[in-house]
Image (cartoon, rainbow, N blue to C red; front, side, top):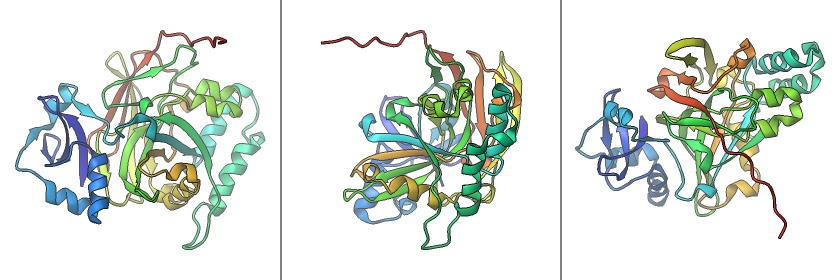
Length: 331
């Protein structure tokens, strides 16, 4: 079962069940997935059951929603400051090789010398999938921003004027909401483009935190229920209407060094992330990057991330912001 959020022709927000690539069925009584999740919590009903109960008799043309730019990200919060966007790295089999190679291209060092990357990756291999009732090793973790950095499918990913580059990161995103007592609940999963500045990261791995403070995208569709253990997808870049680069990627726990539950545990173990009413988007990492193949992106490039289990592909265009950073003034 997959959902979208969109704007109707009457400029009203709506949630709909995806029936096919050409048709969606709106839900009655809710305008956002955030409202839908809160209703499910209040009624103590599984989310998929509530969706079934709220399905209306209407049908909308999915392709028209896309063509007219009315599609929204599949999950958001009414107050952007109360949605936190975070992620984890070195979580996929092969992700250490990708990152180590990326750093070695600039540093000139042998991959074997990048001990911090390899040590972190090995920790995940050895302890990232703990048995039930046990606590696994904590992953690399980073902060990206709040809900204001999330752009809808089809919109531009705006790289800041001071960035050294803007590169795609095809990932799975977990979507969460905290109830009135602060208990986190997983709503579902979506495709995501985590979008980072890999040239800045390559200068020194300690610049990873800076490189992640960029916009991101997810969707178009929200997948309810459990995440498949094996996911196959393709990441592509188009330039001037022509395919510049493409590569298959895999995700799901069969292809990861950490379990989803372990990644969730080490995020929500902090009280800060359990504030009642908050929402969370958490990117689970990737092992596939165009920068690892020597691709340098530029303004106007179109990123496309596709995995059939998530429905339609996620597409966004790279743009560069002309605005210069503000200078601090003394009062």
